[in-house]
Length: 304
Ligand SMILES: Nc1ncnc2c1ncn2[C@@H]1O[C@H](COP(=O)(O)OP(=O)(O)O)[C@@H](O)[C@H]1O
Ligand SMILES: O=P(O)(O)OC[C@H]1O[C@](O)(COP(=O)(O)O)[C@@H](O)[C@@H]1O
Image 1: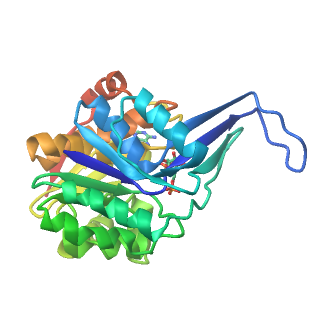
Image 2 (image 1 turned 45 degrees about the vertical axis):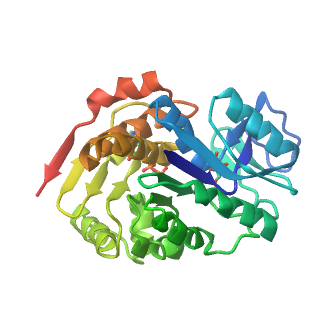
């Protein structure tokens, strides 16, 4: 079973208007509330790939109720801990350009944290836990790291999608895969890359620090997969990018959902690349037909 963890989910309030005139009253053409959060996006793609999964995290208040309602409507199996504070609303303004205001998130009590950690007692050998997204400010900064000993004791694997020191701190627990984009990878080593060779050297260091597999995503410029024995490259699919939300989450879901069935990192990378592109080419998180349409374009080449 795959468990996705979204500790700080959100209702994304998507506001569409032609243009924003700062300092004036602006009227929107269209508005909608959409259940959001990186782990939830991963669950959504896993559903499209027909991979059993359960979404975990914290939800509360009227926004939390709406979020769970939408997940149930999308048939995303979920078992969130209910909190007494209110799930955040993230504002996404889609005008001539896209702007986002992501709220910090609710207060989560010690008792609610304990209830969440009890969920991990359900883990079994071979399960995979996908940890993604920001932490609510009331959670300790090393919250993800605190979960790892229990996950490893259950002989489950984990995937973590976070950045900076928080990511580096988890590597000794041997994540199944991590997926920095090329900017995040450069930031991890406080550098800028002048060539793909330099980038691959840094990705290789993450393997040495404990990661089992490293995918480096480069949006429309494709991606790399680095495993202990092999380097792979895939060009990005060609299409019109209309959405910058959730491509990375989709790539992770494609990898994990395929790996759980095949144990084959290269095949998993290929599906991950297709899922990422399919989401970039659609206004929402991609559905199966869109992933299938992109897949023939993705060729994974081994490089020496
Ligand atoms: N414009 C695009 N064209 C084709 N594929 C894309 C595009 N943007 C994203 N993708 C796909 O989605 C993956 C993840 O996107 P990326 O933007 O690198 O991740 P993140 O959202 O984590 O920064 C890429 O490796 C690629 O496969
Ligand atoms: O947890 P964070 O980093 O605040 O991000 C939450 C946001 O992430 C999303 O899931 C999409 O993330 P990306 O745009 O980074 O792909 C939104 O739906 C949500 O508002």
